[in-house]
Amino acid sequence: MYFPTFRSRRIRGKEVFRRMVRETSLSANDLIYPMFSAFGTGIRKEISSMPGIHQFSIENLVEEAQKVHELGVPAVILFGIPETKDAVGSDAYAECGIIQETIRALKKTVPDLAVITDVCMCEYTDHGHCGIIKDGDVDNDATLELLAKEALSHAQAGADMVAPSDMMDGRVAAIRNILDENGFENIPLMSYAAKYASGYYGPFREAAESTPQFGDRRSYQMDPANRREALREARMDVEEGADIIMVKPGLPYLDIVRDIRNEFDLPVAVYNVSGEYSMVKAAAANGWIDEERVIMETMLSFKRAGADLILTYHAPEVARILKRG
Image (cartoon, rainbow, N blue to C red; front, top):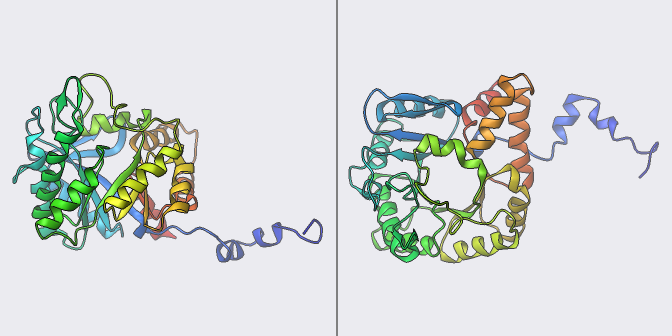
């Protein structure tokens, strides 16, 4: 069809028609809100590089999570800042660790809120890496045992879903096996399947106090130049028992989201990471962009690329905008 017989603007001309033919939809049900739980009381510490995002002590986190849930956000994902850190990340799998106690408090006060837990060691180790260090690098196989213990402790505390983010080979199978062996076969597993060694994580490392004390994470996180490798990583996680597969970061890797959506029929999640959030906030603070429009355009880009779920620090803002209509 060619102009003038066909005119695209006939449909674009009225808001009602634009809504009726809209190809991509966004709902508050698509959102997962990352939250940072810190040991102590009375804590509500704003992250300097992430305006509007805080470290909360448990009682304040529960209060904030309840407000977020009332906006229509169905789930949170938890990251912990423990009282002390050590070489093997003991608090990550302690019965009364920061995340385990946070889970219990949330399930008691906001029982309908889905509580997802990040399963990794970097927030709990004194060296800031995602596992046990041997000869200057993370020992993959030795770390699997600790990750499995961590996931099990989260399930025992009442978590609704676990989400390993460490990028150790074989961690999905290790976690799935220990959950199943201990009667938690119905706990779903959302795998950070394609997690890239990205420069977009900087603000998160302030929020989670997880900056590596030496080296970097390129020996276990993916090379940003690689595309086909993401499908191999996702396929391995699917075969090992993942229920949801995730791409992280989001905006620089929309091609990966689409590749994984085309290849697999499992739900696909995308993590709109801290650096993406902070860039929007910084640009908006300087008056360079319309913040709401950019946030919503970003969310739609994830959905258009094929994501079913969006982990985003913008979740409360998006829910408010959607509720406003």
